[in-house]
Image (cartoon, rainbow, N blue to C red; front, top):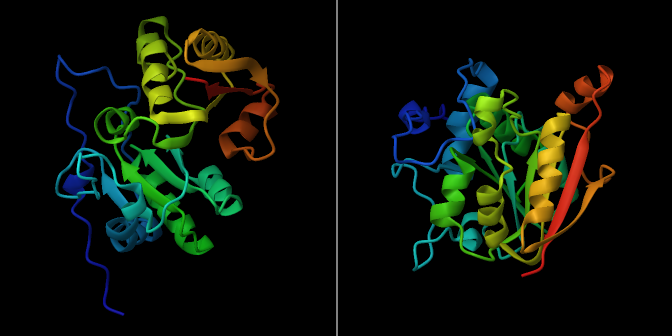
Length: 248
């Protein structure tokens, strides 16, 4: 088999946000890919991934310019949006256990995205695709209203300093955007091990007029314990899950 053609790394560069653009909820990190992940990125990204921000890596669109999930996955099935899957172990496990739904994982951290591609290949997953970039930007510009069955955001950056709270993912305007992309009856599932952020999650989801939320719930069996979560539990930091359902 001929060697993989290296992916143009310019696809993954994150330009600084301009003053009029929404604040980003993430901070890009630089880290080495390593041989296996770099190879996975070169071999698999062109088939299983796209860039949110770069037109050089286009994704299939419908006639009205929205993401064409049926073309992306090669079938029509409910779609789960995974925001910030980290190194991808949880997302890969959930996709493997849930073959009747398609998983779109959006990640800005390149080693994590490459590792998820590697896991998808090793597990033979056909219901997983990845996107590099800002999930909120994808939701604003390319996800049609009512097009998602579920949205997952597990352990997003808590931005613990008070002056950075405005960058948190779970806040009213972002939740309203994500809720609008859910079908009626679809679920928004968030989790954190940071108590002040958990309190904010509970408040924000309960306060959204289009969501039904019962507050904190025990970790559902379908959400595996992440490595990050296991480390937190080892230090005495329990996690909080909050699940809300779109009612209108």
